[in-house]
Length: 253
Image (cartoon, rainbow, N blue to C red; front, side, top):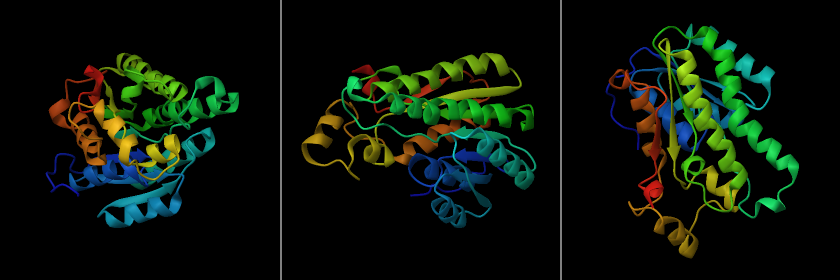
């Protein structure tokens, strides 16, 4: 469900990667109903166009965030369309199939760090020169990067890198640009498809996931979108280097 408009991002120029589905689509919608102009960027061009078509002032741009030239082209096109970038949300990412780390091929390690960590570096590298004072960067990390569990060790390591990157970059870019992150717990999104090979967790597998979450449910995309929009809002103007755990309390278990 899309929240009612509150105009807290009125007129701001926002780029969201991985925005064709899941957390990214919810983030794009949240900014749009808050008055922002939004670039919906994703490898899935058709999905990005579908999300953008639902929003009043949005455009879809196809991008593979693991390819530097494509990220640079996406940022340049975003600047051409929007006239600049006030908020960059580096959300694109995916997990590897859950299982013992020693069973993973080296190519999977490289791909995970390219998609989940280097993509954040690339987005920032090419966007920051176009971002005015007062801009905000929000990165999607994972609660697994802060409190890892067995089975997704390489993914968690990459997301742990996003957390450290966020905090280091916040110190580097302050006070001109704020940099924050969100650390979501698992959700019934593409994360489940890539990590467990199913579209949706059910039965004992779902119960095992939820059992470790004090709020007794998985995350939904709107949970993450609300946190991202808040971090980018004027109400959070004194927050930088902050990595919010959007995890229903999983990190305190």
